[in-house]
Image (cartoon, rainbow, N blue to C red):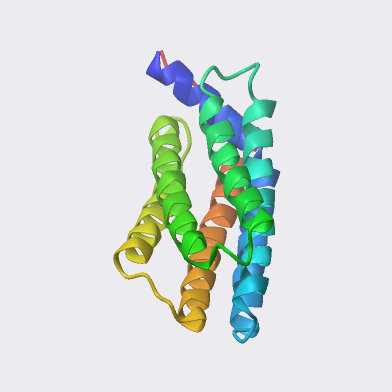
Length: 193
């Protein structure tokens, strides 16, 4: 049963490699833009982050929803997407009142995302080479969320740099994963009896 789930999940990831690539590029762009403009206001950061989380969530949910007919556990990606959409919408609806809440939302979002990415990596580990990239992305997400919860930073610039670094690292890992699962789609492993 686990082998069948792993094969289907790996197939879902491989068919959605373009979404993984777009998510990675969006994360890198967000991080680089934040590094280039560290003096932007916290309001601008919240709006940019809100759009990033919303777009990332929609792409993750769409990837999972797209695989609903071939994978009985497609809900992991949909759940990841729903969390991102909720964080994005909440941030966009209350940008001036949520500076502190935003920090907590980002931390919780990163931890939940990390747990879901590790779970997805574990399920795919027997079917695709390079699943460690997804697991590593999950670990980075959890560490980032934990640091934000343990040491909340009121200074906007340091928070901006931390968020930018997280986005760039997570984006690079998603881009690497996209190319790995793309390779899997072109050359699936041969099933052994």
